[in-house]
Image 1 (tube, rainbow over the protein chains, first blue to last red):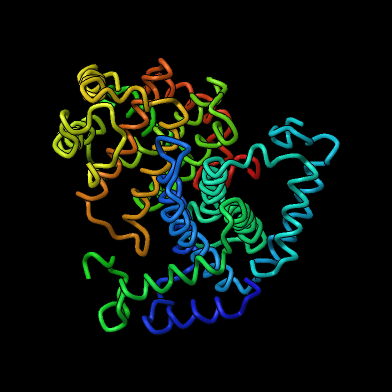
Image 2: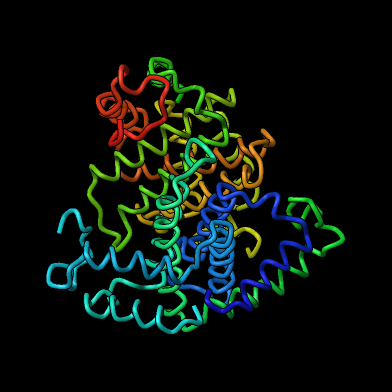
Length: 106
Length: 106
Length: 106
Length: 106
């Protein structure tokens, strides 16, 4: 979310409604899980899906992720890149190529 | 994720490991849920948390969200802003201000 | 869990460790979600699974469900049967037969 | 679910609707996660809750757990007791008493 416009829009939305009082990191983490369940519901009985529905539910997960990042004072893209560096080390190309095996069983 | 650098880094990470074959929208939605559970685990018994741990788990959720958005051909920020417009309409400031009530009970 | 032996075993396990203090309904609900994520992880990249692994993760979800039911003072089987009666009404056989459609779209 | 009445009622409910075709272990695991998210939603913004609502959502999680156990051919109470024996070993009373610390940090 290096696009400041999104961050500004989310902050404004929350401020207008005086909702920061509900947005403890714990409550935002619960909200990410709740919305992730709704996203999964798009695929409950089949791998087929309605794009519009998935986009909306994915947007809800992202929204709470962005709000949590903002609450924690971190940049979403920065933490993704930091974690990617660690994941690269856990899944070396030569071992992980073409396999979905978890790192501790590679 | 208007920052193309993140998108490029994620695509490269996946391509090097030949993992796109596992990244169906359904599998990515499952992955978002799984990682959301790990994020929630940081707050399982208390609202207190270790920032570094939360950042890493949040990064994992975001990573799968970004991969899913990329798989669906949508921009994360664009779908967040689209959804925000709808949420604004469901939660008018005058009704929602200072209340955590769900829209269908406002 | 009409089998009192299970309920007694769980209560004893918790009492010995003095863990009831952590088992608020909210914390138990978080725990159900966290463990549900671990169960889902058994199927993250494929519908194939290791039975032993699934059994263990399913047991963890059930354990927290039983603890939450006990904390709420309800019998797991009783609430399942109560809810089943409501679900029967929402999904009449003639409409729902052979279809995975959600009730509000039937 | 040693109470055969519940198992029989669930099987009958599924058979009448010809829904076993949708109940792969993977789909049932997804369903457990989805319903766990709805249970968590009862506590999204506060530890306070409506008992009736929580009971219903908990019943949904339990229902899918029971259906998954039945699909796997295992008894819910038996796997809970098996897992409890392992958890007892991971959390010895003398180390775990009064602490919510995870076993790998005890």
